[in-house]
Image (cartoon, each protein chain N blue to C red):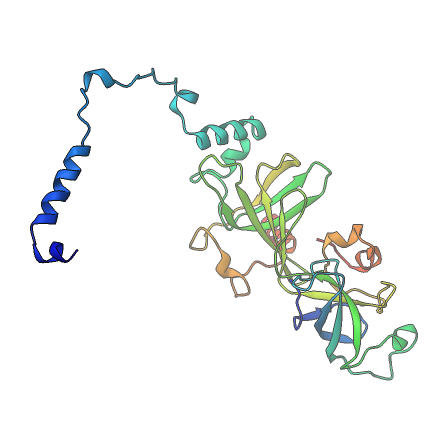
Length: 132
Length: 176
């Protein structure tokens, strides 16, 4: 259940660490974002940019106060699978994406929900070390 | 109007007489109501919910194996580590932190907790899900934590670790 002002961990190597949701996209005014939903975020905390980082990841680095789009990959609120089981993670997390839905970073560091496999963000699920 | 208010008893007597005239004077014998035979009780008098739950458990658990798993005395308990295998060969491993059961209820489910990459994940699995192939007990601790529901262990020092790593460590300990 990601609303306006929800804080999320970022689990890719785009440089952001903590972001804040400022808009849930393509939903009703009183609705919330679930796993697989796109949101607009502000970067609240970012890893410092060092000279060592080069190549394609350097161009996609985000800084503090940047506004970007993100896909929710884990939620603390339990959500349902079609077989009746319910899944819950210990934190809210997202992966930053561009407007076409491609991830900004090149890696995803921890587990993501299996729902992303069948969504249009299949790439995030394949990048992740594990899906649950 | 004015006279009524001044003379106290007069209007009262009139009203009592008016009520009396309306009392029906009917003989009881001519008005006997028709009484029908009672309908035969459904399901031999068993309650609907009991009947329904028994029917459903018979449907989803014909062998009684799953019901035996969550038996209060001999079945699973919070703290055990189990592996749930589905028909499509995928499986979930985790430590039980709660079993939601009611009497003869197909809504019974098991809450499993595990840690993947140091991140806690929980899954609530319906026990009578027909897509489950097998539920296997991997580990039973010698000493259990108090309470039947272990919600309080989340994010404390009693929290579950990486269950797979824990099991391999236990196995190595047994072998040596």
